[in-house]
Length: 235
Length: 189
Image (cartoon, rainbow over all chains, first blue to last red; front, side, top):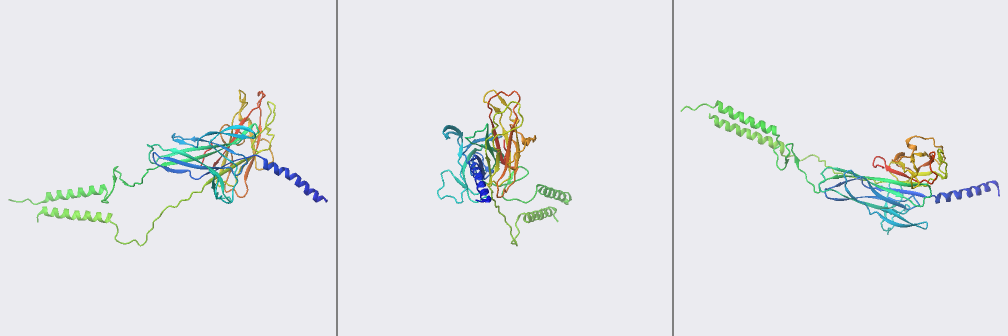
C-alpha cells in the first residue's frame, strides 16, 4: 500500500464520523407560506384566512402554538383549537400544548395520488418539486356595524417549539402573519354623488347649477325689460 | 307690434336654445367610434415562502464560576439557515428570556452575547452593538435577500455568557427565540 492509498483511507475514516454527526444533528425547521395578506370582507361576515406550515428541512417534529399578536380593533378571531397532546419523547410521556404539529416531511418530486390526510403540496417558485405542508385556518368575525371602507389590521403569530433539547437555553422560532381586511358592501351598487349631498340618478340635464341660475336671471331680465318698454295702450 | 308677443317669441327662442344646449351636452355622438379601448384587470399572487432551520439548536455553557466574563458555549455554534424554499427577503430577529433557576434566583439575558459569522470558525465575543446582544424584546440580527440561489444562506451564532458576581450557585435556564419575517410585510414581536 503506497502513501497515497493510506492518505485516501485516512481521509475516508475522518470524513465518515463527520458526516454521521451532521446527519444526527438536530435540525429545527419552521417553514411557512402565506398565500394572501389582503382581503375584502363585508359587515357581519365570518372571514377565513389561511396559511401553511411545513417542516421540509428539519428532523424534529415542530409543535406549533398560534396566538393573536396584534388586534387593535379587538376583532373576534377563532384559531385552530389549542389542545394538549401526549407525546412519547424518548420514552418519556410529555404533555404538549399545541394548535397543530408538523412532522418532518421532505420535498417530493411529484404529488402523490393519494396524499396523507391534512397534507397539502405547495409549489414554490425556486425549488423543484412540492413541499408537503399543513394548513392553518383562522376565522375572523367582522362586526355587523363595521364601517364600509375601513381597513382592519391584525397579526397572527406562530410559535414553533421542539423537544428533546439538552442545553440550558431552549430554542424556539416565531413567525408572524399580518393581514389587512378592507370592509366593502356585500352587494355592488354605483350611484353618482353630487356635491349637494343628494345621490343623483337617471336623466341629467348636463347643466350646472350656476348655468341654470344664469339662464333664469336672463329670462327674468328680458321679461322686465319688455314690460318697461311696452307701449302704453291708449283707450 | 305687440310687445307681449315679442316677449313670448323671445322666450320660445330661449327655450329652444336651452334644449339645443342640453342636447349637445348629454346625447351621445351619432358617429360610430373609429376605435375602442376597453380594459380589464388581471392579477396574480406570488406566494411568499419563508423557511428557517436551526441546526445544533441547543446552547450549553457548562459549569461556570460567578464573575466569569464572555465564556463561550461548550457545544457547536447555532447554525441559523435560510432555506432554499424561501423566495422573499427575510429579516431575522432574536430575543431571550431571563435566566432563572425556576425559583427566586435569576439574572438578565443581557449577560448573554452572540457573534454572528458566515463560517464555522469561532471568533471572540468582541461585538457590543445591539445586534450582538440578547434583550427581552426582539432585536434585528440578520437580513437575507431573495432569491437565495442554489445554496442555503446561513449564519453561525456563537454564544457567550457572563455570570454576575455573587450569583447563587444553581442551574439557570433561559429561552431564546428567533423570529423570521418577510421584510416589510410582517412584524416580529
